[in-house]
Length: 286
Image (cartoon, rainbow, N blue to C red; front, top):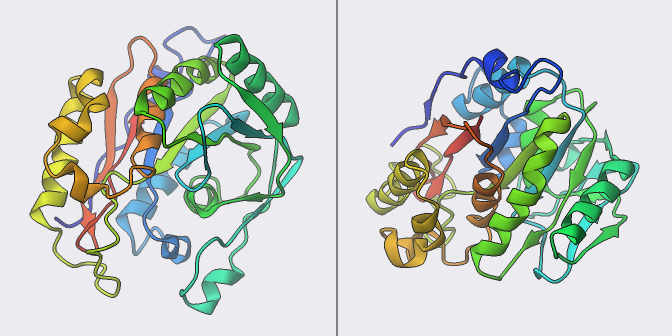
């Protein structure tokens, strides 16, 4: 299926539903695709256009807290980046040279990082401050289109993996409270992420049926708020082992699901398969 873009919901009422003095920011999941997304423009790519429009529709958040598939640690050693300044890390190879010239230099938020560590500790989760100067492409590529001025502070929290998804769900539940403190939460991964069958030079290649079936199953369970089925995706979802030979790109979706607040609904931003086996399904929880 070709990429489909959906309308951005009216965020004015969603942000103020707990009162004007306590706006609640959304929680977002993006399938971040290939690093080449960094070079795309809203005029030529519907996925990029959706991120661009969302960034314009949102008021400027105090910070963005990101859980990316490309920074995974065990559940007993969650890291929270407290660096004052962050730089894009080109953690990939084999792409055109101009991609490695792309930059995303943004501020961090050490005070927020410390607050997150405290919240996780209070919930019985082992977290520690880490000072890293870089953010991986699962962080900076989507943020480049959401907030192109790179003027929103970023705090990256590591993904608790390869533990069962319940720990990532709990991470989202703990950090969901920060949505009412001016913080946008972002889970960055991939709804279907099979690189073995990827057609690298055919972005518009027809998506495999099993990729579409797995993506459709995810959307159905999200709309129904069937968290139990999502946690048991390996047994219940069609083609689960094929869609995710390794699960680190799916786990950030559980972070976004866990961060849901009362009254939240799932709003699809983009849906569809590129390169035959790479989903670009992204949604907003608000």
